[in-house]
Length: 193
Ligand code: AP5
Image 1 (cartoon, rainbow, N blue to C red):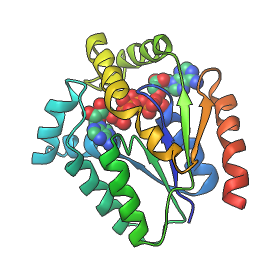
Image 2 (image 1 turned 180 degrees about the horizontal axis):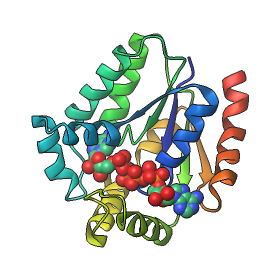
Image 3 (image 1 turned 90 degrees about the vertical axis):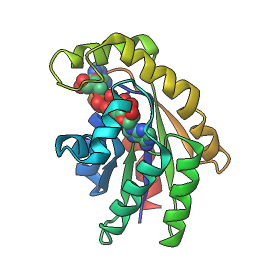
Image 4 (image 1 turned 30 degrees about the vertical axis):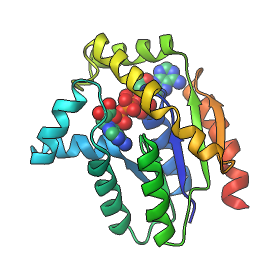
């Protein structure tokens, strides 16, 4: 099993690159943002609570996302591996993920961390907000709050994985195909080795 974390701030290209990576490597894509938006579109109680928090650009409680990931892991016993997108976002989530994977005699192979300037992040998300219908994209103040939340609570999660020498920084600016090639260059020796 090959488990990968695609890491980076809001708008760094995690979703865009995840789609291409799962197509190439046959991994199961687990995006906590997508799972939460699924709950919102089904108007579940969890979704309605999460929406209030997401609309402010803040993180939903650890227990909620850890529960979702735990179920997703159990529901996909045949997966060749998982691509985690937007998770873990706190040290508590990282520790919980390690425990969940440990139970399956598994672990994280690598964290690929996309690096993009704040100016470029805001530009991308403001542009997407013109058409995406995502309520956390259509207001620059909320976009900046998401980036601030990333800087204060999530960026340090990379330090957690650095302790195990699992972090690779990848330049996340430029063309989508070029970035995809950079990611694949990091994955190939690890997935085949
Ligand atoms: P989530 O859905 O995870 O969103 P995010 O991290 O804010 O990331 P985005 O989806 O906005 O960006 P991305 O990095 O995937 O980039 P994308 O490829 O889309 O989280 C949303 C919310 O849910 C959080 O704020 C939080 O409230 C909650 N949440 C989720 N997970 C949580 C967790 N674990 N714990 C607690 N709360 C959680 O690209 C962005 C745009 O840029 C697109 O328009 C794309 O077309 C464009 N683009 C991509 N690549 C390029 C490129 N190379 N050049 C130019 N444009 C590009």
